[in-house]
Image (cartoon, rainbow, N blue to C red; front, top):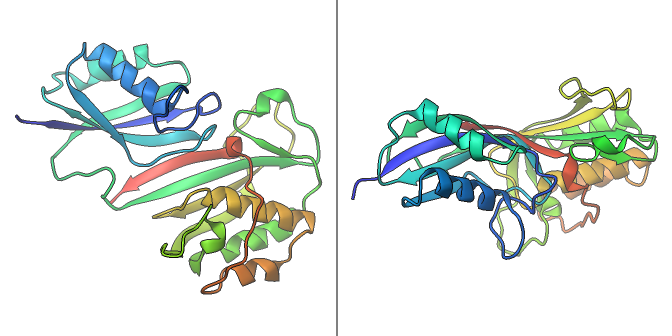
Length: 258
């Protein structure tokens, strides 16, 4: 039986979801997306895969889904409109295009960009909570900027993998890692100054960005030094960092398929 393949990009606010992957007895993003597909396809056979999983409360500006069908979509624009009309309000489809059988959303090489949004030094408005982490302590932003740059390039990153095994591949390349002032997200209830950690790379391990962010926060608090971070990046380092930054500040910003 002939198959048809479609690549769909979506964005979502992850705050009320238990991550992407389907799990028993909890509301996940994949569950809600598949429920919507099942409804608009009127029970026709389908399958959907994502380009990767996000954890509970993590949001996305641009995530990707591959939809497998056994009948073609006649009008992509109308299908996208119908999909959006039936998705919950915290999930939105951005685009749909047909791809061929050789395209593989999981195996195709891709670059991902993550953002981590945070503020410090004051209690923020509760409306910030879904997308911004608030650190009540004052942070040394300048030294955090220096620390972020240490992650760029090829490094041994076992320290920044949650529950690593002895046979994992921990030498990874990070294309960009920078801490910058946030001019991307604004709201009248945001604090005056907010910041973004921006990280780009091909492959990320479980909780990697949040462990990196947690390490930078401890650096900004004076609990760690630049040398402490440098020591974690040398080959075969077994140093552990235990502070995993909260999930709600993390946003999957872009996916680039090569």
